[in-house]
Image 1: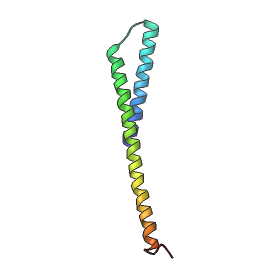
Image 2: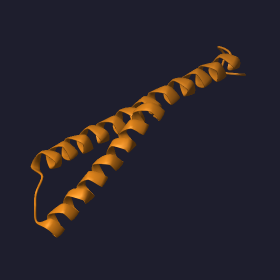
Image 3: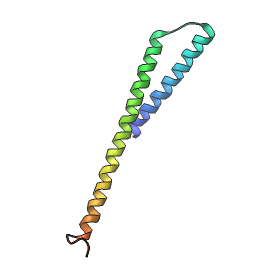
Length: 83
């Protein structure tokens, strides 16, 4: 989550700042910058995907640790179920 999540959050912030800039540009000067708008939209989509990849990776890593703890607990009880 640290690497991909951080990249995702940074990309989302950058795309939001770009959208705010473009909104201000449109409202105050009545001009449009189409390529920047498309690039900001693509950046937002990629950023959300990176954030989701980081979240899924974190879930997979923590699930492996939970399985190891569960196997250790089951192994300590023995074959007869702890009786």
